[in-house]
Length: 383
Ligand code: FNR
Figure 1 (cartoon, helix red, strand yellow):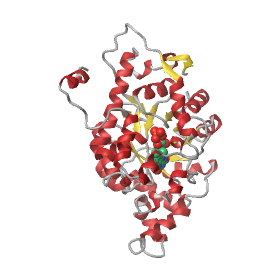
Figure 2: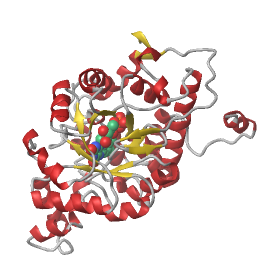
Figure 3: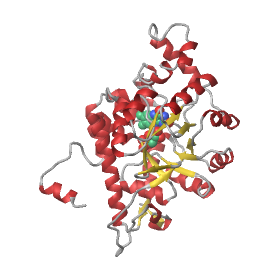
Figure 4: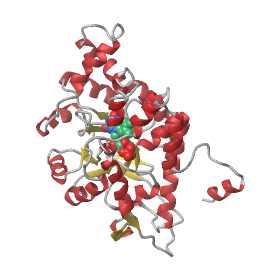
C-alpha cells in the first residue's frame, strides 16, 4: 500500500496519465479525428453523455473513520462467476480502429488483470481469435441480435463453444442514433470491414451471400446491415435466445423500471442499466438516475449491472452504493488501448481497481457488502 509514495520518491512517472479523464486528451492527440470522435462522441447535443457525468457528481460519499479497513477485498460473484473486482470491460466494437491488435490486445489485458471482457458482435476480430487471446480469462459475448434466426443460432453456438460464459443482449442499438460527429465525417467504421469480422467469418452468414466474401468484402458487409439493424426485436422473442444459450443472459440498455420488471418476468438472469454512454437517445435519463429506479423495482430479484459514465474508483463505489452488482467500463479502456495496446488497457484497469481500493479503504469499507446506500450523502451533495 506504500507503492504510491515509493513511486514518488523514485520519480517513477507512469507511462500514461492515471487520470482517466486526462487519458481522453492523450488519446485524442494520438488518434485521428475520425476514430477519436467516433469513440468520444455521443448522440445529438451530447446532453445525455453530460447528464451521465452530472449524476455522478450529484452523489457524494460520506467516509467513515476509526474503522480498521487495512485488509480489503473486492472479490464478488456475478452471474455465477467469481470476479476479482466488480468491474467488467464493456463491449466496444471495431477496436482495430484505435490499435491494430484491437480486441486481441483487450483480451490479453483482461486475462492478465482477471476482469471479464465482453466481446462485441461488431468486433474487428473473430469470436475464436479473441477467445484464444483471452486464454484462461473470463469472457462474455455481446449480441447485436440479427434478424435471421439461423445466423443468430450459429453465432451463439460459436461463442459458447469458444468459452464465452454469459450472453449480453444489447437492446438500445437496433438502429444507430443521430450522431453528428460521425455523420459530419461520413464515418461508419463498423461497415468498413473492420467491425464485421464475426458475420464475415460465420458459415451460415457466408452461405447467404451471392458472391464470396473474398471477392466482395464491402458487398458482404452491406448485406449484413439489414440483418442486424433497422428493426427492433420484441419481448416475446426472448425465448429463442434462451433456447440457444445455455448460460446466463443479461439484457443491456434497460433504463425503465417496467422494462426491468419484464426482464425478470421473462426469466433473464440480469440487466445492465445503460444508455450506451449517451450514444443513443440524446435527452435520455442519466444512467445513474435510472439505476436508482431500476434497483428499487427489481434489485432484490435479479443482478443489476451498470454502465455509462464510470471514470474513477469513486464512480465504481457510487454505482455499487446505489445497488449495482458490478460496473462495465467503456471509453477509458479504449483510450488505454489506443495509447499502449494491451499494456495500455492493463494500465487503465489496474489504475481503476487501485483507485477503487483506496476509495473503499479511506471510506471505511473492507468488503463490497459494506458499500450500501448509507455510504452516500442522503441529500445528494452536489452543486
Ligand atoms: C460502445 N458501446 C457498445 N455497446 C455494445 O453493446 N456493443 C458495441 O459494439 C458497442 N460499441 C461501442 C463503441 C464505442 C466507441 C463506445 C464508446 C461504446 C457501448 C458500451 O458498451 C457502453 O455501454 C458505454 O461505452 C458505457 O459508457 P462509457 O463508460 O463509455 O461512458
